[in-house]
Image 1 (cartoon, rainbow, N blue to C red):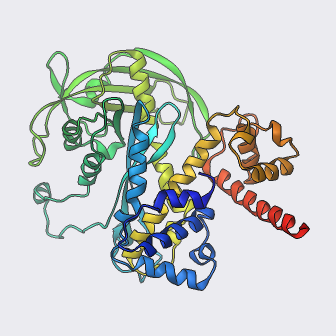
Image 2 (image 1 turned 120 degrees about the horizontal axis):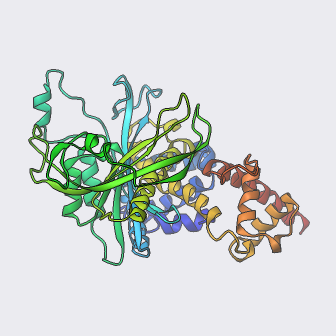
Image 3 (image 1 turned 90 degrees about the horizontal axis):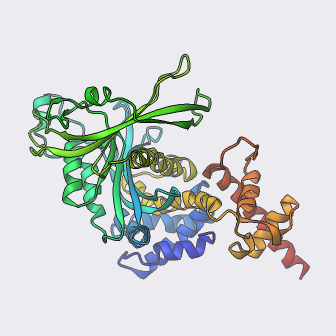
Length: 454
């Protein structure tokens, strides 16, 4: 994981690009990108000839996004079956290239005046530790604008829709052995009747945040609207909850109420494509009864096909829903950590192929954060390269033989600007990555000094 060359060989060495030289080039390029993900392409390639070779690679038809991603997807699948429970988190993001006026092959984004493409990602995460296993499926697509004369009734009969991406990725995930329980987790965009039935077809349960006030039938066989019925349920229990800080909102502690129960989702009446069979599900509602003055009360309504009969199971399902932000982090790694939107390319096809190289790099950034949180009390000398450990320990004024993994990564994060104050949370991927780049610079000087002494 820490050595970019070994990581690149494992991640891209099995790519089938119709020419072994292309595969070797992909491995070399990926290693250079992994070593400094946020640098420009010329800075990563470290030479004009290398840059030209990269552009030639990105122009090859056989070097497709799918071909570059295939080994990573396969490795992720092999890792998934090593765990008893894995969440497949799915989300959509837009890649905004509006500032690149002369890039061909893009579509509408944002307010329809911008240009770029969309990315649908399915990320595998272990729920207990929130550790990222890898990317289980991914799809980049360009928005096709609807005809100006199209009416809403005509839209309902359209065969291809953007929302179909949720079902495609779910089906691409496939099935897994009975020893591994898979749960597809989505945000409000996944609150689709077709998504529920696709989950049933693949025998993989789902868990999504509700947004549609759809028709539903309760245990008494009374038909009404789901959100209205659920909000009438009394609280079963309450727990303390730490609200993380966001832009314009400070961190705070509050009490969350919970209620849950079974319901039957009824098919939409005005949706010709929807499956016409009712769907049994469980509904969990978490909400804040008394928010602070001036604050909007917190509320989550979660729909799932995972049986939920006890309070412990209901709280667990609510926690699973909160893991959705991990896939959003992966998109931030692509945009900020790998600077996907700032790349100087001239065609959409080049961007898609570059994405096949950068997506595993973005996952690697998240997994580096997981390394900092796993086995915190283990001695760092057992897993960290001796030279790297010496550099970090010397910089921090600590004994390398006594440093634990937690202390090692804390000191790496300090080099990236992490303050490590008593009330600070764990270091995020941005500060860890900035600190790691600083470590690489110090390590280069360490090796150079050792060579000069010889």
